[in-house]
Image (tube, rainbow, N blue to C red):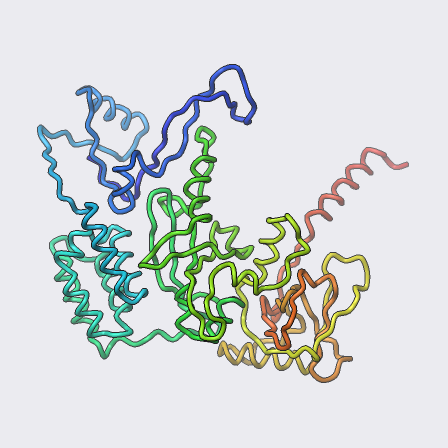
Length: 472
């Protein structure tokens, strides 16, 4: 019997003619493929329970396992008992799992998220939810109204820290007593932030966390201005190992099959959560480095009507010039999902495009002092960070329509004026008479300077070349 903190890694040995470098050979090379479950029966319970019971065909295998633990100096110290009985509890039977999901589909999605989080994070089982807690949870939803999801979140925290002898029912009663209806208030998010639900997808399960206060982006704010509740249709999805660390590549394990089916399958087909079907939307460059992406559940917008991932991507700009370049297409689209601070809105007659001064890869634009003052006041008053020891920035890293880059204050400009370089335009955006000037970063304090890696490499090459040529 294994009582594990995290699910184990499942691998199957296979034999093919691939060498470690991927070349073909006449001899067979043994490798391992990563699995999400051992078989179909195990796949049903693997996302919810990871206690393992292994039956050994040979009585001497337990002694061998104990000897191996001593060799690797592990913390595992097997306790050998004369008999251990096991009986089926049907805690995650097909009927219970089906009834749980049919039940939470009738709820508000924020409440369904918290209930599903408790079962997917191993805090409760399907039997407890249906037989023991269903009436209590329905009472919470009825009494707490729109704030029921907050009490259910506090209940999940209490489940992690409850005493061994406390039942889930008693735990929920204790939480309700500690947080009566009048004590639960809606969370207020700062300007430019929203409450985001997080989903961590591991090789065997989905872990649900949050909602957490998260910096918004252009797309989130666009629909948030139409209806504040629409942000609940956007979730951040991260792909991680069972111990919440990034995916690690093992030289003895072929991860390609696992990545195509587990990660690629979710990116291609999406997933269902709390009665909503989520589909891949896009990513920013920062989230891509963290193996994360944005997913969205199709919804009805009061202004634009039916909205899904495809309609959102189509509204971001004109990407037809990219042709068949999916990596460039996704990289440019990531500009709209970069975490930014909202700022002032600029009309079409207040900005213009100029030619670059030279063969730069990304020129520097300019803004008038009046526009710089408006950005400073709007941005820092909203964040309550307008203090005396802060220096008014003379440069901003920005994102605006299909443009991105840096702008500096030009004191020769009068009125509200924005001038952008042609090289700062990454893709065209049409029919936008008014657009928000988004702040990626404000240069209001000293910062470290970094040399370009190509400049460093070229400098080292020239130094070595001069040493070889000698004084002449």
